[in-house]
Amino acid sequence: MQLQHNSSEFLNNKMNDMNLPHDDKTCGWYAALPPPGPARRLSGRHVADYAVIGAGFAGLAAARRLAAHEPHARILLVDAQRVAEGASGRNSGFVIDLPHKFALENPDPEFKQRLLRLNRTAIDQLQSLVRKHDIACQWSHAGKYQGAVGERGLAYLAHFEKLMSALGEPYRPVEGTELARVLGTSHYSRAVYTPGCYLMQPAALVRGLAGSLPDNVELLENSPVTRVERDGNGGYVLDGADGQIHARRLLLGTSIFTREFGYLENRLLPVMTFASWTAPLNEDQSKRFSGTFDWGLTPADHAGTTLRMTQDRRIIIRNTYRHVPKYGRSVDDGTRERIRAEHRKAFVARYPELADVPFTHTWGGVYAISRNFTNFFGQLEDGVFASACDNGVGAAWGTISGTLLADYAVGAQSSLLDDIHAVTGMPSLNPPEPFLGLGVRTRIRLAAWQSRAEL
Ligand SMILES: Cc1cc2nc3c(=O)[nH]c(=O)nc-3n(C[C@H](O)[C@H](O)[C@H](O)COP(=O)(O)OP(=O)(O)OC[C@H]3O[C@@H](n4cnc5c(N)ncnc54)[C@H](O)[C@@H]3O)c2cc1C
Image: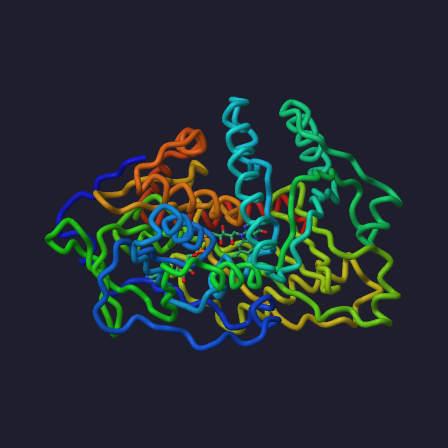
């Protein structure tokens, strides 16, 4: 996809009041890791061949691949926060091979086969990096349960089974005592197990990926880029608070924040979702829990609750969506408390025998969706490339789109590049405010109400 920016006054008009990433410090995954070593910040003047902004799945994969293509190039990877503080380090840890809900509805079977190929390539890539660099991130080929509680969820599951059959993908319905024995709860009426999903500890994985970057990638953290402009020589100048980068080419792995650079401004929508988890269950609590460890369940009806039991015996609840026009900041403590109370209800409904087990962390994260659920991949302007709009499933997608973005930027060709061009496009335009906010909020509320049995 090629998008020409509309003018040479490129970017700067809106930089003064730009939204910068500022995620909450209450993410359990991050807190469970040892404190990171000191960060290298952007300071002084740097000249690089490539600058990559955003050290999430997309930016990390792009920088790694650029380095493989050009081992002598200087590649600067810059993030506004510490690695793993953004969405890539605070998600639910499902690395999903199957096309996401809306893509699954696509009538063209080849479209879905392309997505499967892309996601599975990403999974292979992550798995080989985890093995090669010995990244301790609870990486596990656990598959995924899609679980239904009420009638609406069951209808979605039946539909999902038909789609899996049509796609020729393996799945297995699980119900009754067999399901309860895995999940340790009889809250769910039925689930469909699909084997291709992997689970992981996202903050550990992302930190491990950053820690194993090739030598010619330099990572600069806590370094928000506050302005980008052309440098007059066909390259770009990136400004930070204490330094500047001059780069021949720029790759954006900035998800929703891509808007802040003047691109896809009226096409990406910022959505936050939230999670809470318990401490690892102790011996007594583990005895009261009648299920197994290391599994993940997503809701049959997408606005319901995601549930995970980690390898180290923590239970995670994720639900609640918010449209956040002022993205890049965490919610206030009162809102977090209210969301935690909702998570509590979902937890106790599933595990009344563990009602005394408290949550230790509640956190939120932002990602980008589009109204037509289309991902953007490609060139935004001469020398500027982006993968933006993950529609909420970005572990596999961010990895493969970042990798292929680097291929595209260096002019490589491959059948995977053909695949990604075929399944991406232009996110549709948003209506103006106040209609946009009203419409999105109404849709989120309606979805939550319709899925209330699954919450
Ligand atoms: C609670 C939650 C649960 C989720 N669960 C799952 C799941 O189980 N599986 C799944 O596949 N997906 C899940 N997602 C979505 C997934 O996390 C995202 O799709 C994915 O992280 C996108 O990766 P990315 O690299 O494109 O962007 P991000 O991870 O958002 O990375 C963008 C990076 O850019 C940096 N940045 C932005 N602006 C600037 C700037 N001006 N200067 C410097 N740096 C900047 C940010 O700090 C950030 O680190 C979940 C998301 C949330 C919030």
